[in-house]
Length: 156
Image 1 (cartoon, helix red, strand yellow):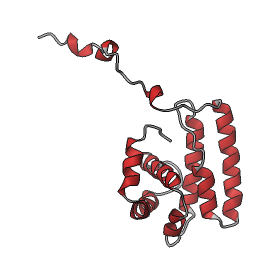
Image 2 (image 1 turned 90 degrees about the vertical axis):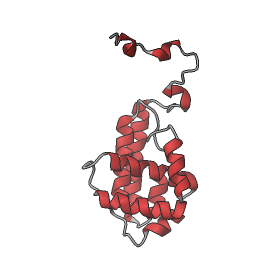
Image 3 (image 1 turned 180 degrees about the horizontal axis):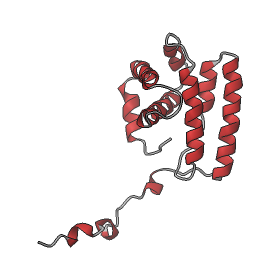
Image 4 (image 1 turned 135 degrees about the horizontal axis):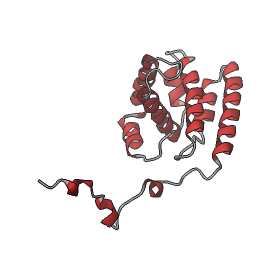
């Protein structure tokens, strides 16, 4: 039986193939610049956290999150900063913090929660912390937040 047909890339013959680069605008900045800005943002977040302003720290991290294929190191640094915020927050404060976020920030937070859950053992936050945030975020933002994250092609 002939099985060579399974090795043919049929997308080559299709004119309507959508490439990942066409789905969203990639990060226009240089990867080194994105990384340095992310590290500066992490330093600023630590100073804001020292003052006890968790919503402000979250807005800093979630605003201008790096997207695209060439900025993986910046994405991981931003995730690590976010995980440090999530791990240092009391469970009773989470609903108020989430309500203070905009809808876009809530969606970006959900993306980071899913990324954190997809990388077990990474960072200094346990899965129970991420699940607790996910539960509260879903209660407040609704299932629409999950749908928007699942359909958005931009990965953090």
